[in-house]
Length: 256
Image 1 (cartoon, rainbow, N blue to C red):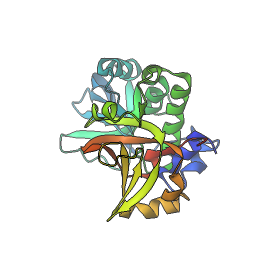
Image 2 (cartoon, rainbow, N blue to C red):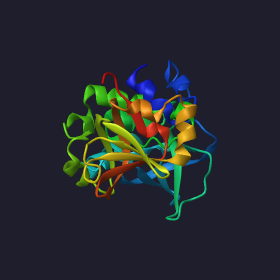
Image 3 (spheres, rainbow, N blue to C red):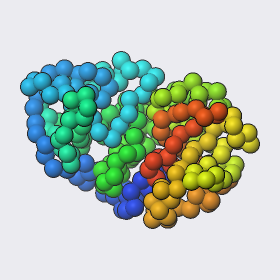
């Protein structure tokens, strides 16, 4: 199974969307409206000419160079007519509407183009399997070609360097390394990447997440001695931590 296919484990049937059909209509949910882009705010947000602020779903900005991220988005949507797609058009607490966005005449979401350029990160919080597959494959293309953020050797943090990971507290980060042990403490399972549990990097998984892993055919214990990538927001509980809220945050890599 390829790395892209394994990444699709965020939804039970996600792999079906990746194996040959990742670009076929992914993220084309119910239409929530349209408009013309008047101004780009940041790497994943823009304002329409009617004043609505739109936030792109399914991606996270790369903190390495926010100006480049905003410029990449402006190059794709600036002054263009766009259609908004999603399951809910209710604004968030900041008044922003979160959506998958399509430029007029395009069959792929704006998110895919930004990921394919290496301008943003896939957030792995997309429940729809076809859409998750579309976005994951777009990111994998940029990662393989070392485009954009992936051209930097520090784009993926080394799990053996907890200090480097801690420097990104509060940021969305991708970490890669070998799981040395899988341990349960109370209602939490720890994927430990070092021997010092209080200082080294670990991914934490709540008991309520276990059925999702089982449905995806992935036993947490099977990750022991495997190389994986984990993505999510970095926190600190002694050592650096990433809480896994979706199966798709974990990508099992080839080899041991």
